[in-house]
Image (tube, rainbow, N blue to C red; front, side, top):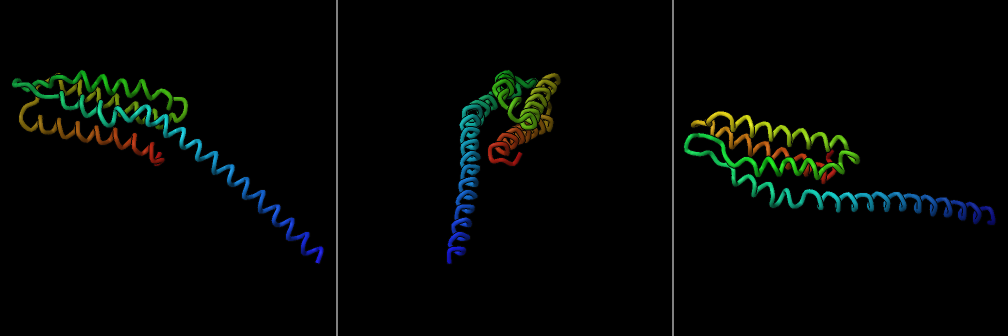
Length: 148
């Protein structure tokens, strides 16, 4: 009977240590996730909800087919890149994707503003801009939900 009690006691101690270890790892991961969420919210919430949509609404094509008022959205894209420098050190892969997307969008806006946009070109421009913005949002949202 004493041997059975000893085995049960040792088994209970091992299980208790394993549970404590697993709980500590889980708590650490949860704290890390919460901290990342705070940083993420601090950096991107304003951009995604207000700043980018507001900057986008200023873009229009004048009567000569010239793309105008792209400076606001270009400034916001540049600001996102600058404000994302935390991820340059913490998650280089995400930072590089985000940086490349922002630079690509800025380049597209500049290229599109050089020559007049006529007829279907105008529709094509706005559709591509919409898709590029969706892709930027996807990159950011995927990081937030842990798809990256």
